[in-house]
Length: 482
Image (cartoon, rainbow, N blue to C red; front, side, top):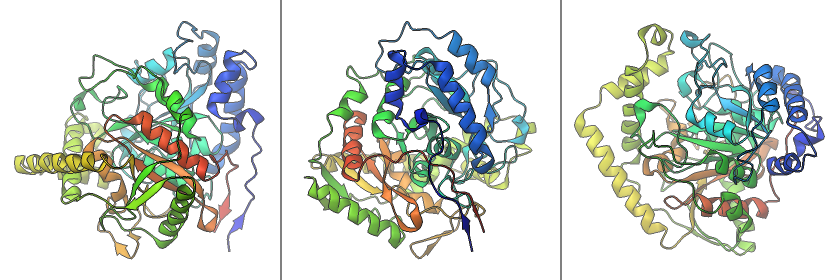
């Protein structure tokens, strides 16, 4: 039998506030950046033994940044001056240990920050540390040989998701108010779903960041993670902006994403697919919960129709495009670092290197066709809704989920199929918590939006969030023992 603690939140009252509320307090000087850092570091210390979400912290750097906070950009829509942030351990932060979750970089300390980190710090964000990730972000379960596993705050026996599992768990447990994530095969969306937080994968170029070797690849994306859609919009405002170093980079919109959220309208036109035309299996406990959520949305004025465009070829296209990304990454990693790679990571690289020109050409043709059909869908609907992931969290000790909805998978990508569509088409997508489901665990819905449609997508997500009773607050880790 499991031995379970209760789920009250014993952190500081400031930790219970939403990020936009804390930023308002900062602007009115009713709270100081130092006070927030004190709260954040105390909470990290309190919950780290249970969840291991933020294995690297940088207090000296953070307090120094607080003392030197530059207010010249305080009128920017994405100003988050003095707010503590987590940065995923795949993204360099100057002077802070950045391991990529691999032993070959276990002591790596970069001498420069990623441009996204520079932008966030310019807009007043204060980095408190690095959040845990699987090795080079490969996998839907966050563990590595450097720091070990991250555990789900809702039940510490369970998977927190990956590869942004540390970020999601950190927010859910109240370590920070906002945390940065990244996404290819659901690496941001799956952890958000498993940990009961909001995670957004924006359009390609909306956030300028990443590996310079992959400039023209649209599949990988950086994105905001938060406990509410309004906070997610605030973080996206802080992240967005043009950077000439990235040829896909696009300017931030004239209006803020936060303003869009405040205009949320419950009268949505929702296309819903419980399994993407049978493409992705789903457990009954997830599908039944989402059917109840759709009923709530209908009562709030939404029009819901079960439909989905033809997605023929999506599986092969995704795997080919993913393989191309891993092949490119493999070429850029020194042999002494690759020598430590786990087997599945080397298998990813080998799969990519085995691709032929016809495989890549076919993937792009398939991508184009599915994108065109999705654009046609949006002539009649505001969003396409589906599960974020087809199951609730499995045991953390299970490297990858092997069976969902009666279907057994051959490898660790199969259970993540709900993530493929937005990645292949380059459409923005967001995972939103929609209440507590079976076994007291959070359930999420995924909304996929129109091209470059982050503002409308966030507004739709806010409408969903309000219909189910609002965002989930931070929780004390539910420490369980088998």
